[in-house]
Image (cartoon, rainbow, N blue to C red; front, side):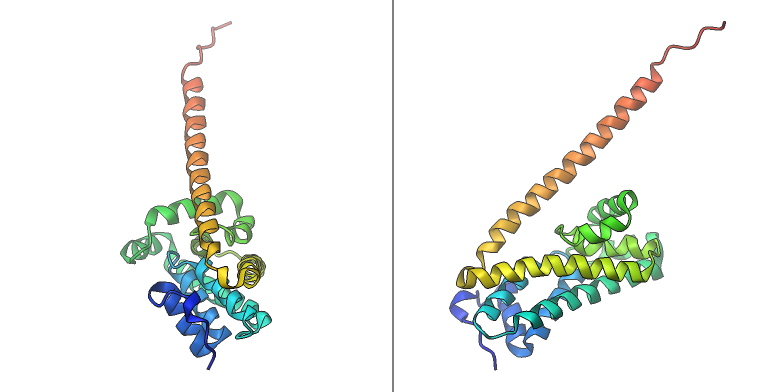
Length: 221
């Protein structure tokens, strides 16, 4: 049985659970953890992926197998959420999400708005943004985005995201957990950028409406 250096992995919490999963099932365990992370966005892929890269650096897992299995896990999780959106429709999807633990309906609203504005680009680039990377599958399903395009963009975006973090974990070795601090900063920066973008959009619309409401009436000729 594979054994990851326990001194480098917390025994409790999500990291310990992910390590146990990889010890039991190898790269398939890493893929299963990523599939669950897609279904429950608060679960951190930035823990699973560098940890899998660390295991590969020890020779416990094949680096190629880790990349393939984690990408497959991302696609499977995305397909499940796509199917939920397609089968239930917008209203029932939001109603279901409101009942799920750790899932915020406000996050789904923001993801839906982003998908509406950016379409297919949102599926690809959304795979590289925390929270959005999972939830972007819901509006894609609701809008019945063509499945071949959805699968292709999801696979490509997920492979790049997973490959980056697996590669960094592989390079850092025993210091793999340092990735979490970087991602936390990245996630906070993304959240601030989203809030600023929304505020800017609201201000722009209000200012535009104000200008329209104060136009002088045209004098009859």
